[in-house]
Image (cartoon, rainbow, N blue to C red; front, side):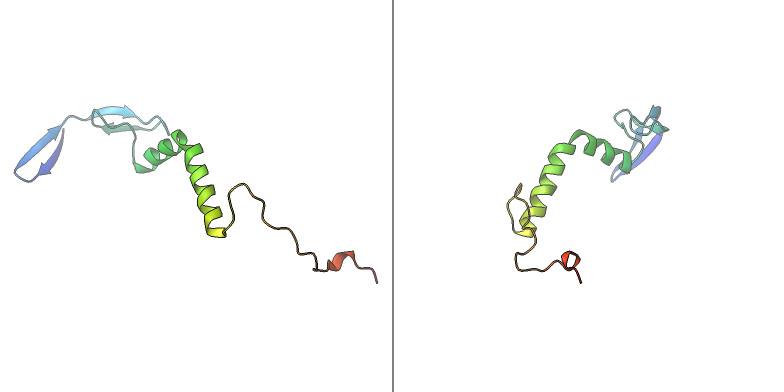
Amino acid sequence: MKEISVPGHVRRMRLEERVCPVCGQAFPGTKRQRYCGASCERRAYYARHADELKARHHERYHQQKGQPAGEAPPGPRQNQVDCRAQTV
């Protein structure tokens, strides 16, 4: 049993053999514990919310760059000379 100290009393929690669904590692965990550690918990969260997180990151990137999301960045300048195209 695992003992957790809380001010005023001690709480005992039964540990059982659990298997992490992300990495497959066996670990002693409480009844409600699903993942072996914080890194596997974050991986599972990202896997469940990947599309939403990617869209939010994409939107934040374009806000920082100052252009609307979905709009391509400006191409090369018209008056810029391409050195590779010149022949000697």
